[in-house]
Length: 229
Image (tube, rainbow, N blue to C red; front, side, top):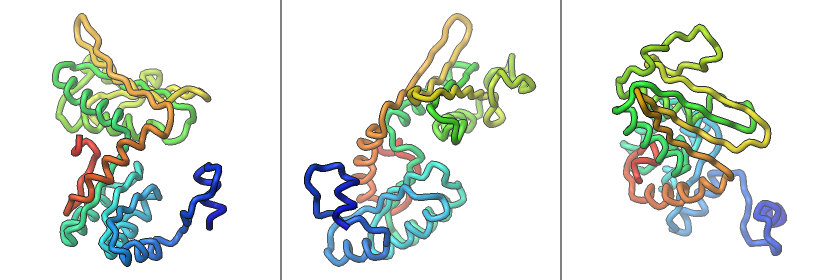
């Protein structure tokens, strides 16, 4: 429907780009042209497994960016992709800055035993954010114990503890504020902080393009954009 695609693109002149909601029709059209195609899935957790299977049936690889996806679904997809020899990237985040923040936090965690995550968001939905939860999970999986001197959770002003290793998350919500995540580490005599700000959804595009290029070479499922950095 050309008029609809014209509105989506925001172009002065309409482009011959159809906008459809039928994955089977789109996948079939691409496979008939024998073109190289990648399905980018921004849908919802309940649809991901079927979408990836349907794309694979037409020889198309998938990039999945659905932050709320369950690990059980990822495991099932991994088994499917392994049997089908079909590439799929499941990326909790497509932001390269977010991935670099997580990697820096992991490196720092081996040198500090106190850590807190402070984030700001313009709206109150999905808090703590997927980014904060991912960072906390990454640090928890390392087997470190943080904040030994203040691990009690009775005081709500001290934030929410994620995991069992004392990683606290504090979220500030103010309309109009930019999305930001800061991880503070400390030990006697110093504080080390790493921060990532998001000013526009355009920040996802370099990571998305990288994911599309890399997934074409895969024959199985890969979890996390950081595998390609």
